[in-house]
Every structure is written in structure tokens, then in C-alpha cells.
Amino acid sequence: MPPIRRVRQHVNPLSSKYANPADAPDWAEVFTNPQLPLHLDIGCGKGDFVRAMAEQILDWNFLGLEIREPLVERALIRRDQAQQGNLHFVFCNANNSLQPLLASWPETCPLQRVSIQFPDPWFKKRHQKRRVVQPELVMAIANLIPSKGWVWLQSDIKEVCVEMCDRFTENPAFSREGADWLSESPFPAKTDREAVTEEKGLPVYRARYIRQ
Ligand SMILES: C[S@@+](CC[C@H](N)C(=O)[O-])C[C@H]1O[C@@H](n2cnc3c(N)ncnc32)[C@H](O)[C@@H]1O
Image 1 (cartoon, rainbow, N blue to C red):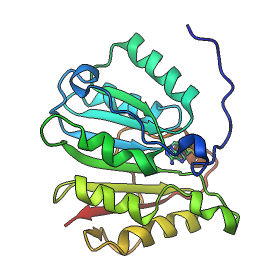
Image 2 (image 1 turned 90 degrees about the vertical axis):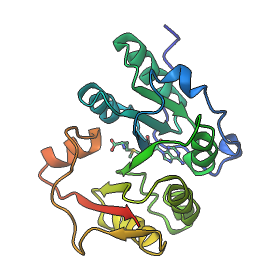
Image 3 (image 1 turned 30 degrees about the vertical axis):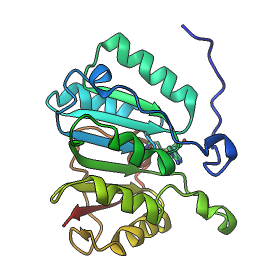
Image 4 (image 1 turned 135 degrees about the horizontal axis):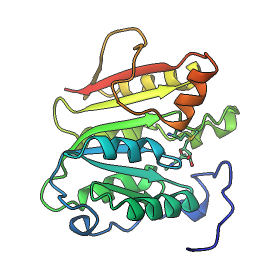
């Protein structure tokens, strides 16, 4: 086991430390079958959500992207211990790595679903450019996901979810499902933050965007 490394609560994705895109792994090595439909979870934290999804849905692959390296190291150890051939994690800044990572898939990347759940809020006005959902990220997803593929957004902070929705609404490749917040998650697993928010009886703001 590698030594336990301190996990910082937040990291600044605009710091020079995260300026370079991650190297893509050999997808045929990390996934037993890289051609299965792919669910991408951006900002997966400890990875519990994708781990639970991968346990229950064996005919999909699950990929978590996370900028805090120690969380990815631990998630990969747990993945190896459980021998989950449909689960992988990459330490990266999703803002510059999503496109090159998925573009390196053998044949066409089978991306079908993307989730962005409880992203770091970066409340201060001068820090908001650190938020993960930026127009370039939305465009990268639009270029990779096929028609009828979809993006799931949720947060316990209304302002943050409204802003994520604004970024997807302004991209003509996506249309929102309904005009109101969705009440239920479509997934059989919850993220850590989702579980904590629901235990406290607090609202979760949820929306789905479908690729035209
Ligand atoms: C508040 S946590 C939520 C984790 C998990 N999705 C959940 O719902 O419990 C947001 C996560 O996104 C990660 N993150 C923030 N910016 C990122 C970026 N640019 N690329 C990849 N991960 C990022 C953070 O390190 C953190 O683990």
C-alpha cells in the first residue's frame, strides 16, 4: 500500500500544476471490454458513486475523472481489490483532459452518459472561473456524445445548478428535459454529497440535458 497522502479539500484547477492534459491510458488494458457503453462522471471525488454503479451495471463501463490525485490512487486500489473490469479512474483536470482522453479511445468512444454532481461551488465572484462547467467543457461533451446521449447535472446549491444549466442551455447541441428541476435521480446509486444532503432533508437541484 502506498503511504496515505493528505487530501486537500479543494484544489485550484487553474493552477499551473493542472495545466497539462493527462496522458491517456491504454483503454483496452483498463477496461475488460472498452466498447461497452461509457458513463463518464466528472469530479467523482472518492469514486463511490461510479464504484456502486459499476457493481450493479455490468454491461456498461464507468470512468471517473478527479483532480485530487490521492482520491484517484485510493479509488484505483479499491477497484483492483474488487477486480472491477468495467471501472476506471483518471487523475486529471477535466477541463483540459476530457477531450484528449476520450479522443484516444480505440475506434469511436462509446460515450453515452455524463454526470456532473455537486461540483465545487467556488462562491467568490473572482473564483467562479474555477468552476468545472465552462463553455469549452460543454462543447467537448457535445463533440463526443452521440444524439440521444445525455448529461446529468445535480447540486445542493441552486445558484451552481442554475449556472451549469445556463452553460448547457446556451449550447444548441443540447436540450433540457422539461423546464423544472427533476425530482428523482435516474441512477441506482447516490454520490456521497447527494446522500448527505438528502439525510439532512435539504433540496437537490437536478436537470438532464439530451444531445440533439
Ligand atoms: C464537491 S466534490 C463532489 C464529489 C462527488 N461528485 C459527490 O457528489 O459526492 C467535487 C469534486 O470535483 C473535483 N473537481 C473539481 N474541479 C475539477 C476538475 N477541473 N477536474 C476534475 N475534478 C474536479 C473536486 O476535487 C471534488 O472531488
